[in-house]
Image 1 (cartoon, one colour):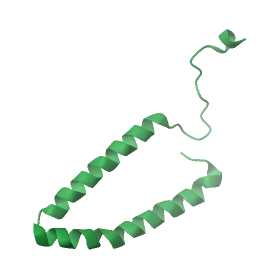
Image 2 (cartoon, rainbow, N blue to C red; image 1 turned 90 degrees about the vertical axis):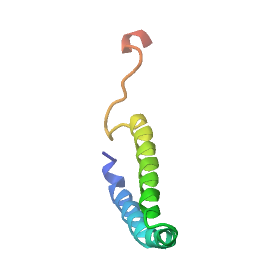
Image 3 (cartoon, rainbow, N blue to C red; image 1 turned 180 degrees about the vertical axis):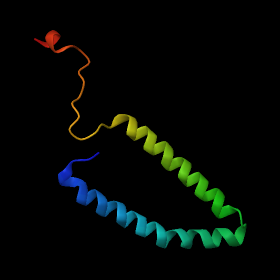
Length: 79
């Protein structure tokens, strides 16, 4: 989840990235297809695997908007 004040901007970036992928994807895939018909699929698999790895890496570090950070030590130990 994200900050409600930033959700519009996040949606805009997401839609722009999606549109760019629809334009750039065929420009990359067509030359790959002429080299080998299976090559665009293997390239897509590699890109999706890398994207998934990046997402998992950063998702583990993130937290939901409004979620309190847990302290490593009890609050009483800080006093």
